[in-house]
Length: 329
Image (cartoon, rainbow, N blue to C red; front, side, top):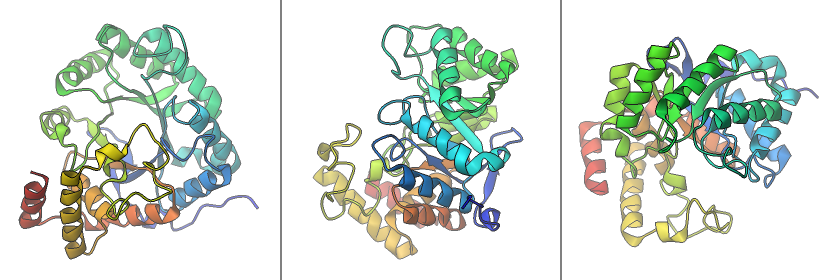
C-alpha cells in the first residue's frame, strides 16, 4: 500500500523561524549521517524516515559523503523520496553539503567552485531532485580563496539548484567573513551548523553571538556527543553500539573514567527532571535562544519519539544550569 502521512503530524512538533529568514524549521531535525547507507537495511531506513515525518520532522539533513559508501545515503533517500514522499516534497526541507573528500583527485574535496558545483549536481542526480532546500559548505578550505567558495554558493542559488545556503564547522572569524561576502552578493547565509553539546561548548565562544547579531539561524549536530550523552554507555559498551562496530567517529578511548563520571552525574540530574539523559542533552542545546533546531541521528523509532517530546520540556532553572556547569567543569 502507498504511504500516507499521519494527519496529526503537525500537532506533535513546534517550528522556529530560522534567523531573520521566512523559513521555519522543526525544533528536531533528522540527520542521515548514519543508518541510511548501504550498510543499513533499506526497509529499516525507510521506516525511520516515515516515522520521523509522521511525528512532524520535516527537515532531513544529508551530505554528499554520507553512507557508507559515500553517496549511498543520498541514493537510498532518493529511492524513499520517490516511493513515499514524492507527494509531500513541498512539505520537506532537504539539505545536502560538500566539503569533505568525495572522490579521488584534486577536484573531489574542500571548497573550490569546481568541486562544490560538481558535487551538488551529483547529489541532485542521486536524490532525483531538481533542487535542494539548503546547500552547505561543509568545512572551511584553508587554500581556496573564501570569495571563490562563497561565489560558488551564490551561483548555485541563482541557478535554482538550492533555495538557501549554509555553512558548517566555520569558526567565528571565518564565518564573519563568509557572512559578509554572501550578503554583499545578494545571497545571505540562512544557517550555520556547528558541533554543539554539553561536552562540546566551543560555539558559546563567539559563534552563537555572531549568528544572533547577523540574523543567521543555527542547527546543532552531535548534540548527544555520538551517544555518550545518553544511557547507551552508562553500564559498559553494548554489542550493537557504534563503538562496538569499530566506528572511526567514536572509539572506546573516548569513554574516559572522568567523562563517564560526569555523564552519570548528568544522568542523575536528568532523572530528577523527569527526563532521559538524551532528552536533557537535547533540551540543554535547545534552551540557547540562538538555536533553531537540533539534528538527531536515529537507529530506532523510539529515539525519534523521545526527541520529539523534548521541545515541550526544554526550560531549565538557574539552579539546574549551574549544576550542569559544575558537573562539566
